[in-house]
Amino acid sequence: MRKILITGGAGFIGSHLVRRFVKRYPHYEIYNLDKLTYAGNLENLSDIENAPHYHFIKADIVDGEKMLELFREYNFDAVIHLAAESHVDRSIDNPMEFIMTNVVGTVNLLNAARAIWKGNQERKRFYHVSTDEVYGSLHDSGAFTETTPYAPHSPYSASKASSDHFVRAYHDTYGLPMVISNCSNNYGPNQFPEKLIPLFIHNIKHGKPLPVYGQGLNVRDWLYVEDHAEAIDTIFHQGKDGETYNIGGNNEWKNIDLIKKLIEIMDKKLGRPEGSSLSLITYVTDRAGHDLRYAIDASKLKDDLRWEPHMKFTEGFEKTVDWYLANEKWLENVTSGSYQEYYKKMYDHR
Ligand code: NAD
Ligand code: TYD
Image 1 (cartoon, rainbow, N blue to C red):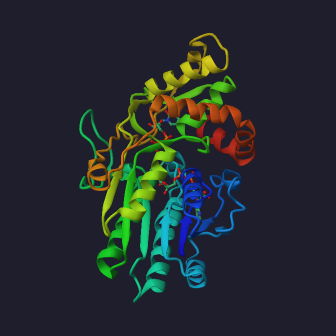
Image 2: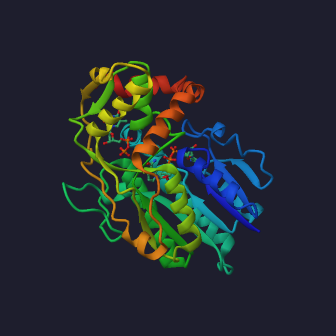
Image 3: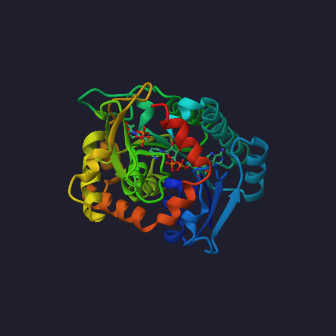
C-alpha cells in the first residue's frame, strides 16, 4: 500500500489528477490536502469522494507545524505537489500571497518530507508540479527545453521558479528524492473562470465584453488537462530521480485566433448567427510584463518515457465548451460572491 499526498487536489488540474489516481490505483491511499481557497472546490470531486481509499484533509501548506504533524501522522510515501496560487493577474495585484503559498508552502512540505523520510528515503518521491512560465518569454521561434535558463517575469512565475530551485536544492543538499515537471497552459473542465478560456466561454454565453489584453498577439501552447494528469502519472511512476521533464501540447495559438475559434464554436452551439459574438471582443490595457510567447520542447518526455499528448485540440476545445454549457450551476457557484468583486477590480479600470 502506498500513501500518496496530493496537494491542491480540489483545484483545476489537481482534481483531474486525484480522480485519475483514485480510479486507476485502488491499492494506493490517496490523501488530498487543500486549503480550499477561491480556486479550490470539492464539488470537482463529488463523483469519487466516497471511495474508501480517498481522504480529504483541509489544511494550509503555509502552516509548517501542521505539515510536519500530518507527515508524522500519515507517514506519506510520496507527495505530488500542486497547491499554489496560480493566476498571473492576481500575482500582480498581491505578490505576497504567492510568495507565502508557492515558496514558503513548498519549503514547508520539503522540510516535513525531509524530517520524516530521513534515513528511509528509498521508494520515496517528492514530485513538484511547475509551469513553463519559469523560463520567461520567447520571440517568434524556438522552444523551452529543460536546460533553458530561468527568467521569470511575473510575481507568479518568480514564485514558481523559486519553489523549483528549492526542490532541486533539497535534492542536491539533503538527497531528497524528487522530480519536477514544467507544463504549458492547460484547458478543460473545472478551470476557474478567471483564466482566459473559461472566462471567455462565460462572457460569450452572457453577451459580456471579452477583454483581450494588448493586441491579442501573445502565444500560448495549450494542453488538455487530462493529458497533463496522464503525463504526471507517467513521470511520477517512471521519471528518474532528480530529473526535470517539460510537458507541452504541441499546440500553439495566438490569443486572438483562439478567441475567434471559440466564438465560432459557441455561436454555432448557442444557435446564434455565425460571427455575431465577434462584436464582444474588446481590446483592453495589456497585462504588465506580459510574456509574448511560450512554447515547449517536450522531446525528453517523449524519448525517455514515451509520453505524448493524445487529445486533438478541436475535440478537446469542443468538449470543454460543452462541459461549461452543461454545468451552468458550477459556474454560478464559483462566480458568485467574492468573484464579482475580483472581476470588478480587475476589469473596471482597463
Ligand atoms: P488552481 O488555482 O485551479 O488550484 C490550486 C489549488 O491549490 C486550489 O484547490 C487551492 O485551494 C489550493 N491551494 C492554494 N493555496 C493553498 C494553500 N496555501 N494550502 C493548501 N492548498 C492551497 O491551480 P491549477 O491551475 O490547477 O494549477 C495547479 C498546479 O499546476 C499549480 O502548481 C500551477 O502552478 C501548476 N500549473 C498550472 C498550469 C495551468 O495552466 N493551470 C500550467 C502549468 C502548471
Ligand atoms: P491566462 O489564462 O491567465 O494564462 P497565463 O497568463 O498563465 O498564460 O491567460 C492566457 C493568455 O490570455 C495570456 O496571454 C493573457 C491573455 N488574457 C487576456 O487577453 N484576457 C483575459 O481576460 C485573460 C484572463 C487572459
